[in-house]
Length: 206
Image (cartoon, rainbow, N blue to C red; front, side, top):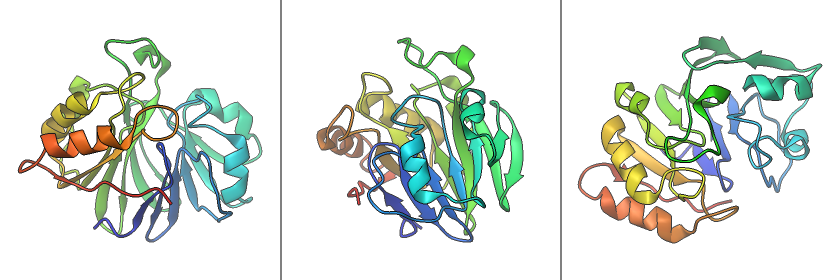
């Protein structure tokens, strides 16, 4: 289930299946061709036009927040809001909220996003930059949850472990560490807190 998911650092994943999908491209080292790119919000380490240019062409489709769309004019862009359900490039997608509850970096009013989508029949939740929020307990049948663990701008490892317990995925993958903020120690703490509760995979960044 995890073999088609590659972590490129921070919140950037390459997920392969029926389509090649990237999330929040940042610090891309190799050129590629994405069929579909998800952007969770407009901060530089999630929405980087330089990195997007390395993995996209005129046929690449995008699902983005409203504050990113105008910078992608001339491309296939779908703007999503929390609660939206849509199909793009043949992939079923649900846009879900991502926001802070005890800090001000990612206000709920900005309508920034996480995404749920299916690849090869596997239901993936990419949480975006978020704290543990009540909406997480309503998510159902998540196979793989990609969760931030670094603290500072997002959940701490402890909070992320509580979020994973709310979501009850078959598998959790820590992210949002090792680049801008946080270290592998955060991922390891997250894993230890979930031992015997949720299977955790700590991926090596490519």
